[in-house]
Image (tube, rainbow, N blue to C red; front, side, top):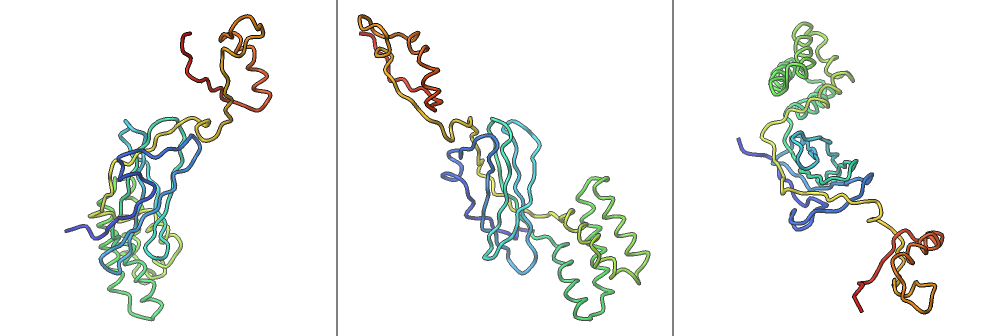
Length: 237
């Protein structure tokens, strides 16, 4: 089966990942993208990010907005290089769940829909580890054991959380252009620079200044509110 979603207009990025974006520790990387599907089924999407060199991805789910816009963000916690990518897919379990609520509100017979839900929950459980699949398998047993209260259970807040926490991921589209974040020091975002010429810092008019003379001026420069000292090229005379 082919992918049913398209991811485009991903921001931020520079020349499709040719150059990294820049952040400092503590800042957020706010992601936006246009994501569309091939029909009316429900789409889900997420950001995967990690420090360069690490194997395990961390994930943040994207939020849908009007006009096919999706957004999400992750925070930079260490001064290391990061990489990120986007994934999107049509979630058949979520599509069924949203349709179930509408059909039930319309007064339709839900027996067939319950069976469809059981099949989708079973298929979703197979995509997770044994531990993570346990709540899905428990829901299947509950729906089979008490068909009379199946609709009530599906419409419960507990079931809504179950569907939200267990997306049915299959045939996902991956937007991976090796997008990277170069993380710098806080001073790269904002700092106050003071420029001086070392040879002009001598307190003795009969000799040129030295770096030792510059050191003596540092406390005064700091008192003035500067936190970066900029020295022009120093050439031999």
